[in-house]
Each structure stands twice: as structure tokens, then as C-alpha cells.
Amino acid sequence: MIDVLAELSALKAMTVPELQEKWQAIFGERAPNASRGHLELRLGYRIQELAHGGLRRETRRTLDALADEVMNGKLGGMVADPRKPAPGTKLVREWGGKEHMVTVLADGFEWQGRRFKSLSAAVRAITGAHWNGWRFFGLDRTGGAR
Amino acid sequence: MPANETIRIHIPLTVRKRGGRPRILPPKDIEASEPPPGQDPYVLRAIGRAWAWRKRMERGEVTTIADLAAEEGLSDRYVSRLLRLAWLAPDVLERLVVRREPSAISLYDLCFVASLPWDEQPARVFG
Image (cartoon, rainbow over all chains, first blue to last red):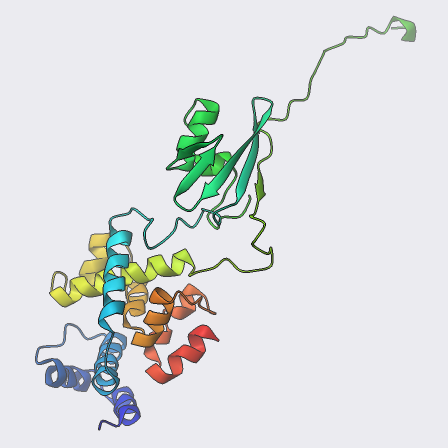
């Protein structure tokens, strides 16, 4: 049984060369750098991982999927666009003297019975011109009204 | 010029409201005071990014934070701060990402929680 807290506080007392030595002992390779914060964080993580176990496979998979989605720039499956209000929200705006109401759906938008994948597409149907849908409805980055 | 010779010019003006004012009507079943369900997308996005970086470093595609930062066009400080999210305690990551429990602290503060022992992290993150 590893005394985790003792090991962790020992890290704090070590010099950077000592941390690098510990790195060599734990990971079996040269420490990647001499950043005290980084070495301490990673060594501490490994010590606790050995004692308590690491990430569950399911969590790891979720993180992988999340990372893929964030890195390929297309939010949707895991992370909703932060500007998008809760499904069921109605966005109302006057255009050409008339009020237009778009309903936010879980997977798109609805206007006059038509479904749109993006808010901009719905706004294009309303105005016939290209608008940024979020701007047209005054939605800011937090999904609130501007 | 005598007062009775004042020339009056009428310019017809209609004040036009440009663009109209958008309104947002929240769905009836959501109370206004209730926080939106699920995780803050910014927190999720930051964790996803940090996780992608952690994996790249573990695969050896990039070896130093400086290389990673240069590649991403970000500052070293920012990258090394954000990268810490990937080293949060496993159960904290699970609660944030899988169970979508909202964090009680800001994303900035969240980045520094990874330095705490694992058993102290949940209380700090979830309040």
C-alpha cells in the first residue's frame, strides 16, 4: 500500500533534478522538461493512479469523443453550441413589418412548419438574404439576449 | 426678418425602427431561475481540448508544451494552464464530462485544481 499523501508531500520537497530522477524511476524514461509544476503534477497523478486506479474506460471513451468533436470544430454531438438556447425556446423578430417566430428544436430550428439545420438557414428563408442567424436574433455567446 | 415672414418647411419624416427588436421566449417548462441543464459548453470544450493535447503528448507527437503552443498558435502559459484540465482526478473528470455535473468554480480556477490531492478535488469543484 502506498502512502499517497506522504508521497505527494515528498514531491513538494524535492528539487527539480530530484523530480527528474523520480520521473526516470516511475516512467522509465527521461523527464520531458524541467518545469517544476508539470513534473509535480504528472508524478503526483501517476502516484495516485497507482494507488486509487485511473480513469474508467467509459470515461476515457467519452473524453476521446469530446476531444475529436472539439478538435474537428463541429460542435453538436457532445457539446452544444453555447449560443443555442434550450429546445422549445421561441425566437421572435420583426422583419419586413411582420413578426417571425423560430422555434429551437433539439436538432435544429423550425419556422412555419419547416425544419432547418442551422439558424442561419432559417433566417435565409425568412429574409431571402444571408444573415448570421445568431446575430439576427440577437443571441450572444452565452445564449442570452443582447 | 419680421416674425410673420418665417418660412416653415415641412419635411415628412417617419421614424423607422430599424431591424426590429428580437425577443426570446423561453419554453414554458423551464423556470427562469433554473440554471440550464447540463455542463457549461465552455468547460466541456476546454476539457476536450486539453484531453486532445494530453493524448498527443502521450503518443509522443509533441514532446513539450512549447512545441504544442507554437503549433496551436497559443501562448505557453495558456496551453500549460489549460492542459492541467486533462490531469484532473478521474472521478472529477467523470462527473464533469460523463455525468455533466456543473462546476461550481470558474474555468480559470478549475485549471488549478489538478494540483490538489485527488480526494480534495471534488469538494473544490462541485462546492
